[in-house]
Length: 334
Length: 290
Image (cartoon, rainbow over all chains, first blue to last red):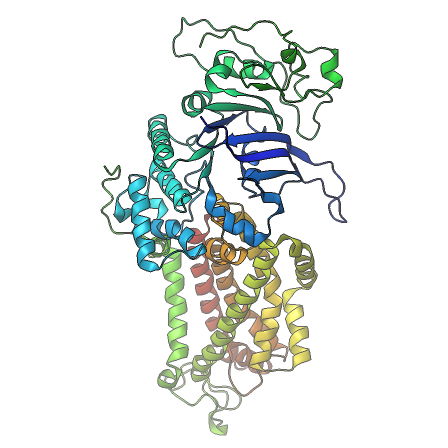
C-alpha cells in the first residue's frame, strides 16, 4: 500500500444550530463533528465506524464539502477544499463522489435512470448527446445493469438495483475518491454481499479510494484496509483492519467489537457492556469524551482530553491509558 | 458481463403517467372533472349555446318567470337569464383560471425562494404572514376598491389575496424535498443552485400546489361573486355569476330565478372544482389527506 494521502481532514468541526438571532434565541449547538483528523490514502478503503449519531455521515459530507465545516480544513490532493470558491468547488466535484444509504431517497423519482447518470456530464459540459448516451450505457455495463434501464424510472427498480444506479451515477465522472455512506445498510443481506462485491470489483478496475462509512462492523472488517472508530464526533482509534479487530486498543473500540454478534453459540464471548447512554452532543463531557462510560477511567481522564497519538504498528489511539500501556489486557475471540 | 436485471420488459412509466392512471380510477376526480368540464364547455361554446343575446334589453319581456321560451326566466331589463348564465361562465371561469395561474406563478416564485434560499426565508415569509393576517376577501375588496372595478383588477386583487397561503404551501413542500438525498447527490455532482431548484426540488414539490390551485380556482369564483355583490366586481352590463346575482338582489322576492340559477351555476362549478381537487390530492399529495 502506498502511503500517498488523497484526502485529509485537519481539526474538522461541525456545529449544528447554535446561532443566535432575534427569532432564534441562544443555544450552544450540537457538536456533531468535533475536531476530526483523518487521512485517506490512495487506493485504500478506510472504514469509518461508530454508533448512530456519532458524526460518521457528517464527517463524510464535510470531507466532500457538501456541508460547510464550522472550523478545520480538508485537503484533497494537497488543495484546501474549504478555501475553494463555489465555481472551483463545483469543478473539483468531478474527482470525488458519494454513494448514499437510502436507495429510495437518493434518486430523483422524476428523472429516468439515463438522465440521472447523464446529469453528471450535462453539469460539467462533457460530450454531446450521443457520447453522453454512450457513456450512460458504459456506466450501466459497469454496474451490471441492462441498457434498457436507462429509459426507466427509479420506482421500477428494486433496492439493490437502485443502489447500482446510485453507484453508476457516482462513478460517471470517474472520480478517484468515493464516500460510501452506509451504502449497503438499507439492503437485504444477500443483496449487501452483491453490492459489496461490486464495490470491490470497481475499486480494482477503476483504482478507487473509498471512505466506507458503516455501523456494520462485519461489513467494515470485510471491505476495509484500515478502520477508524468514531465516538461522539471524534476519531478515537485508527488502525489496520486486522490489527484493530484482533487487538482493539481503545476501550470504546473494545466495547464496540464485543457487540458483534457471533455466528456460533458455543463461541466464547467477552462482552464489554457499556453503562449509560451516549452523552448528548449538546453536552460533551469534560476531559476524555468517553470518560462517562469508560470502565477503565482514571482521574486524569476527567480533566485532560487525550490526543490521537500513535502506538506501535501505525495505530493511532486517543486514550491516556492505552498510550502508556496501562489498560488491562483484552482478549477477543474473533 | 451478466445483467442482474430481468423481468423489466413492461413499458416504462413516468411518475406523471402513473399519477394520471390513478386519477382515472378516482371517483371524486372523475365527477369533479365532469362538472368542471361541463361548465368549461358551456363557457367555451357560449355563442352557440345561448338562445339569446345576454345583453339585449327588452321592456316587454321584463321579469318573466321560467317557461318554455325563457328556461331560466328574465331579469328586470328583460334579458334572458339562461343566456346570461352561459356567458357569465366565461367571465367567472376566466377570473378563476387567471387567478389560479397568477397565484400559482407568484406563490411558486415566492415560496421556492423562501424555502430554497434560507437567508431569504424570514424576510419573505414574514411579509407573507403580514398579508395573511388580513382576511383574503377583505384584502381583495380593498385592492379592488383601490384599483377600480374591472375584470383585470378583480383578478389582480384575488391573486394578491390568495398568494400568501399558496407561497406557504410551496415553501413547506420545498423544505421537505430539498433535504432529500437525491438533491444532495446532485449537489455532489456539482449542480448549480438553480439547477438543483428547477430540476430536482420544484418538480417534486409541486403536487400540493396543484391541489391548492383547484381550491384557489373555486375560491376565486366565489370571491368574484362576493365582490360583484358588494359592487366592486366586474362592471355591468357584462354578466358574471356574481354580477347576475347582484342585479337580482332587488327583485329576490318577486323574481327569485334571477339569483337562483347563477347561484346554482356557482355551486356546480365550486363543487366540481373541490371534488377535482380532492381527487388530485389523493393521488398527488397523500400526506395532506384529511
